[in-house]
Amino acid sequence: MLAPGQHERLRHLLTAKARQRHSTTGPAHPHQKPDKRPRAIDQRHIRNTCFESLTRQNVGMKTSTAPQARRQSPKPNGFTLIELMMGILGAVAYPSYMDQVRKSRRSDAVAALSAIQQAQERWRANNATYAATIAALGITSLTPGSYYTLSINTTPAPTGASYVATATAASGKSQASDKGCTTLSVGMGNKLVGTTWSTDSGKINYYPETCWSK
Image (cartoon, one colour):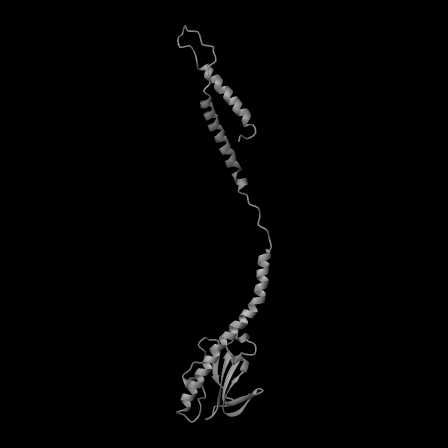
């Protein structure tokens, strides 16, 4: 489709080509009178020439206006509804998710305290009392998952019939935020009354009981 103004240029170009065609057609002999009859105009040649000329002009016009076509509208500011909903769901679900993670990590303390129980029985079989330190049992003071530190309580001190082993959530770890379960203990021949350990001969007690449940 021709742009505005190109119709007029095409008409002038066709007229000029027709005149040029007539002016170049003269007599074949010097004494021969020029043929004044109208000649047939090569319309096909003129159309091709005009089309090439107009095509070059249109290409130039499109090239000059290309930067305007590439101009993009600015992106809107703020959050979309979906982004807002995702943020709300994340804020609600994340605390619950972390509670489940901490609960699953308690197994790190349970497994370590179970290993201490077995090691203490082996120790007691060859000694008059239970071991007073973790090192004596050949166990490191940090649980395999590094979420708890292990110790043998000095109050009450180990005897030939009792001891208390404790796993305490490591400082700086997420288990330190495990409310009510930052410390897990197993008492052999001891029970916890309030905050004080007392003798409970021949029995093994686990504290807090809810933290040991699976």
